[in-house]
Structures are given as structure tokens and as C-alpha cells.
Length: 205
Image (tube, rainbow, N blue to C red; front, top):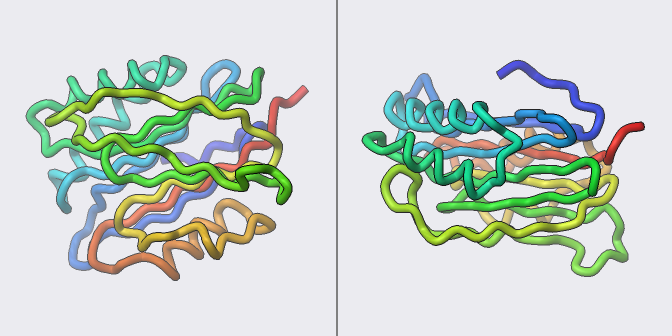
């Protein structure tokens, strides 16, 4: 994917395929829309070409209308992925005008929002994951909405990254550096792996 430069966020991604495979089933999305941006981390079940095909199909579905409510997008992905291996996915939609983030996860792509100010309570928020597989088993869906502030940092990581993964994060580093460090230090090496890091900068004037 082309590296998009967006004034309201800074972001970075690091990924690797399972050793011995030329393609990864872990994909990411960063799709801007009027007044916001949609970000997602997608893990196609299994490895290799079939996992990559399922992940690519999910990303393509998200790209059609990234400004839609996240629940609607997840449902559309589920329908479009029938007959594939299926994917697990976490996604977040940022609204720059109101300073809000709406997020939702199905499966085991974990998400954490790290607050930029040390005195904020709680200092981090964890994404509530719904058990299921898009394309195979859709769980009841409920999205959460959080206020976001300048410097807040979202991390989405597939299960190729060892947990817990946010303890050593240095918020003074760039999102790209955080993603690369997490992959290097916490990648399992026995699975596809992906880390997507998004820092909220706020609405530009």
C-alpha cells in the first residue's frame, strides 16, 4: 500500500510473513475520508496465498466506503468473505471534527489506545474483542466510542506479536519506529505478524 501522508494523524506499520512463505496473511488499511480516517489490521486465517487472498478481500471491502459506521463495514466484510478462509479484524474510525474514535474488533487482533498525558485516567484503553471469524461466524457487534486527544496513540497487533505488547512503548518515538521495534522485539517468528501504530494529531485548521 502507498504510504499516505495525512496531517491529522501520523502512522507506521511493520509486518513479516511466516518464515518459508513469500506472502503474509496479515494486512493493514489506512483509508482517509472527508473529516476522518479509517484504519484496520486484518489477519487471514492460516498462512500463505489463501490467507492473503481473504485479507485482501476484506481490505478491498473496507476501501469501498470507509466513512460508513464500523458495524456496517464489518457486516459487509462478513458477507463478502463467505467462501474464503475468513479473517479476524480490528478497525478504528477517527472523526477529526469531534475528536472521537470508534473501534470494533472481531477475533484476536488486539488494540490498545495509549493516552498522551500521564495524568489521564485510565492511561490506556483496551479494545473489547468479540469472538468470531468474518466470513464464517459473525458475533453480535457493538462498537465503542472514545474521545481522542493530540498525541494519543493507537496500536493494533495481530497474534504474531507476543502479549502483552504495549508495556515498553516509548511515546516519544515515531509510530513507524514503535511498529518496527515491536515487530523486532516481540514477533513470535512462528506466524505472520503485523503492527499498525496510529498517532492522533487532531483536526488541522
